Length: 253
Image 1 (tube, helix red, strand yellow):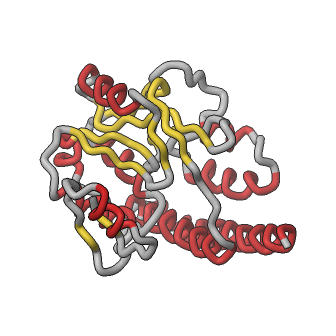
Image 2 (cartoon, one colour):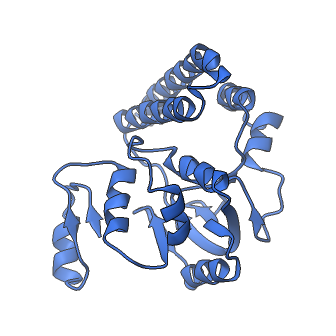
Image 3 (cartoon, one colour):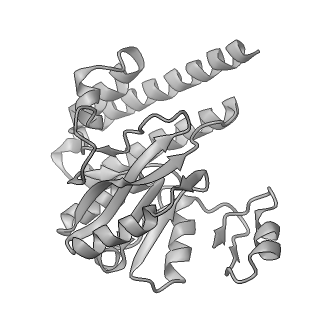
């Protein structure tokens, strides 16, 4: 287990209650990708499970993921069905959007959440009762084949938080590995609950990660001319999130 400089007593709890667990304590918060890479380098298992700390695993779900990977040798990554705290299904598998679809989704999602572009991107109308190939799955829970990860390289540590899941899935497909959604495996994800300041910081990190993904993959192509437009979209998203956080805070008071 890698602890990212937490201050809630987790290292002490693990040491007292699970002495057989190897604990690696980072002196500072290195971010999601860097911390997971440390854990990956210190293991040798055939499969690697990325699981957020705010997730709960349903009985048998991890076995279901492993069984799926064993039967589908072309799969580099698989993600389970993710349930929100309120019992609704999280749209945790999505398409790689085109530049213009991504921009349209970013703007319209705040104004008209049920718009056709967002529904296409989120695969809202896809049958989720059976496994299927998908462009990318949420990093809140994903199983990765070590052989595939050795082929693509570890998580990109330039992402402190967010978009590293899209990035690793994108690299999997580029190297010929498949990404699958496995709904018969279920995870409960208690997302959210952060303070207003925390939500604003998270939004800033999200926009920063989106821009990095764009620059990393398209900075040397003709699409670089679209960078100013992307910046405008990301600034709009950030401002919208700040306004939303302010109004949410006032409503709670």
